[in-house]
Image (cartoon, rainbow, N blue to C red):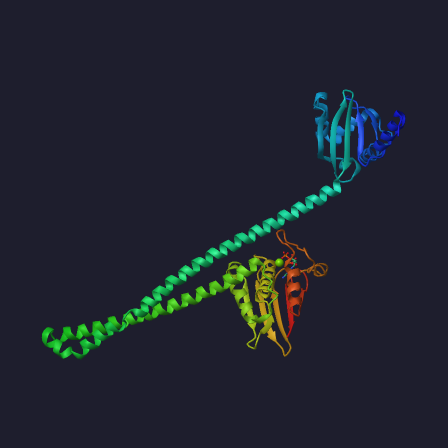
Length: 407
Ligand SMILES: Nc1ncnc2c1ncn2[C@@H]1O[C@H](COP(=O)(O)OP(=O)(O)O)[C@@H](O)[C@H]1O
Ligand SMILES: [Mg+2]
């Protein structure tokens, strides 16, 4: 079918006119020759009135996107394409009171008297992309941190095993030592004292016997001391290994979903010993009153430890270093059907408004807080058939977390 040239031009015109991107033609002096509907809308949103004088287009660009202006004025006709699909920040927030926008822009020469600019507002996509990128990089950093921590824990673990092997060797060496040789010599000298006396005299024979006896005794004492110390050191090492294991699982964030018998008292005591150095350094006194009755429950030891560590840390962080009273009280009680844990601190407390927000994901009042501690605690406690509350009598009056497990 033959289409005459006028019809074709008209059709092309309307394609440009209704194109979903803004298209503007300038002359090299910056006067607008033509623009389509979308361009009109976008320029208007920049504060350019519908009656925007055509000569003022470059003026406008100069204020809202100086970088684009620079490229346009510096471009020679012979270069054809000036730039393509570049993302530029359009600073029109100042005048309109809105935030800056983000435009994707292409520019090229059509003929020596005409530059065409095609552009669109991609602020939303750009923001989404930025948010996604920062989420990805945050995740990578977190992952990096936990890998680093896992490596360090692994190295410490190896060092502890090495140290244990050395101490074990000393222990075995000591077991093989004949403690009784000196004692035997002392016994022999004692039994033969009268015969020896005839050779070296009574006084010297008695002195030799006494000396041998006291040597034997002090050797025995020394060995007993070393053995006790070695046993003590081996016990400390196995405690360190247990803590390292817990930390390793903690770093790996391993939720086994496993529900094994866990002794809650043991978990609390391990947590307290892991935080012992921190509380001592801050001059905080920890009172603990843990029931002697059975504190077994079905659960995930690592997760429960994570809860207790989080709550203890919140308590520690709530206590001002300069405060007069610095205490944390931990109590564990058992009833016929429940296990009840309370961690109370003499810290800064909080008002009613804050009380309503504490468990909200991401809520934090600390400059370096994550606001995830309490959310995670609640999730873990609820998955263990328990409830958790955090209350305070008001600012400056301390706070207490209560956890109740239904057995
Ligand atoms: N023992 C406490 N005393 C006073 N405020 C507390 C206590 N525990 C938690 N909070 C408040 O609850 C907020 C959220 O705690 P949490 O979820 O553990 O996150 P983070 O410790 O990272 O801030 C804290 O920032 C703090 O304002
Ligand atoms: Mg916390």
